[in-house]
Amino acid sequence: MTIREKIEKTLDNAEKLNGELNSFLSIERDYATKRADELENDSEEKSLRGVAIAVKDNICTKDLQTTCGSYILNNYKAHYDATAVKKLNDAGAVIVGKTNMDEFAMGSSNESSAFGTVKNPWDRTRVPGGSSGGSAVAVASGVVRASLGSETGGSVRQPASLCGIVGLKPTYGRISRFGLVAFASSLDQIGIFGQTSKDAADVLGVTAGRDANDSTTADVAVPDYAATLDNDIKGKKIGVPRALFGEGLDDEIRHAVEKSIDNYKSLGAEIVDVELPYAKYGIAVYYIIATAEASSNLARFDGVRYGFRAEDAHELREMYRKTREEGFGAEVKRRIMLGTYVLSSGYYDAYYSKAQKVRALVKKDYEKAFNTCDAILTPTSPSVAFKIGEKSDDPLAMYLSDIYTVSANLAGIPGISVPCGLSSEGLPIGTQLLGNFWSEDVLLNLANIYEKEFPLGAKPKIFAE
Ligand code: GLN
Image (tube, rainbow, N blue to C red):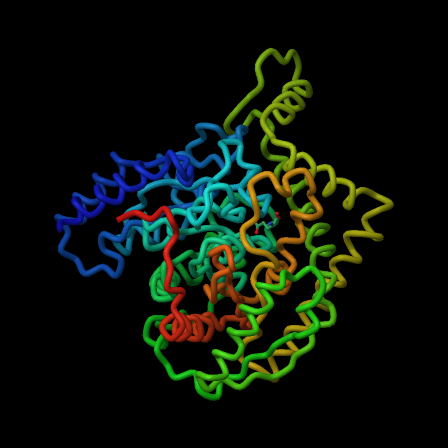
């Protein structure tokens, strides 16, 4: 098959399934077929030559829409490619579309998108997780091999778990955030979904590295991730923080994750106990810091510089107010209000500075734990994919979906979710591995060996042929 034929098949599949799943906000046929033709005529060796990739709609793509799942950026087009997108293009990948997401990446179910909910291909009455649900479903439904998402508190690992695929959140500073629309800058990181760990490794290898346009990227060598995927994991030490396997964890998840621990043992890994005493404050700390940063970052959407502007406003402040009133959805407004509150004088010390101090302690927990192990294993999500609508009126219940993921973002360490089993209803369950700074190679190796030895052995009901 030529690259053009392959890409056309991908686009056909995306179009065919989108009516049922709503995972793409745009399917870019003209753009992608033109790229395919260019690549066909270019004989240069490229690592991702002709590989179709889907990109979350909060990552800027020159000439294509970037809506962040929000009405306020309806029809907004960026003037430049995000560094990660540029690197993918340079490596020969073909962006086939932009994916649906919770508005401004705020959510755990994709229900806060201004453009409709994404459906889980394992059961269309259920959520795919969020906020990168569209990118997760584009991969889980077999349309693309890999996609880009973003992570502020679990938005790649949690939907990966709920959709039965691999989801990787790299170390903070590993992939450039240039061109990723900011939600909470000290937590945000581009993440990767793959059908397999190999797919994630291939995309990470291309997108990682120092970028002059993002001063938080680190000048740390990028290893050849694919080269160490099959390394023997005998003797690798996996830490298990048992104290976190308590309240709120669904029994079926507990069983599946315990089984994954036994499976790792059978592969020669050594299981050790670790303690993360401050992890229990993760959600509280995250929702103070994330909302504080969001309230500041989202101030730029004022109807002047980007996207939508409200009509019939008679003076400047009225225009700002109306634009933001009409352009933002309920969850975004809730977070801007919370963030403004915790930053306000009088509350700043009680909430924001306190949260920053606890954040430092969460990070110390991990630094200490990684003195005794190579990776830490926990569930990814406390439950399997829930029903659409089940938690949408209860923000606190929704926020608890991130209980196992947020602390990695607070600490800045990498994490991966690997499928480890199915519930009695046939819904996927993920196990999470967290690693020390810059140890994505270790995580990908552990994940790859697991998926080869203990494959899920099932596919979603809706899957592209
Ligand atoms: N679900 C979390 C939130 O709502 C995490 C989001 C994310 O990682 N972008 O903030």
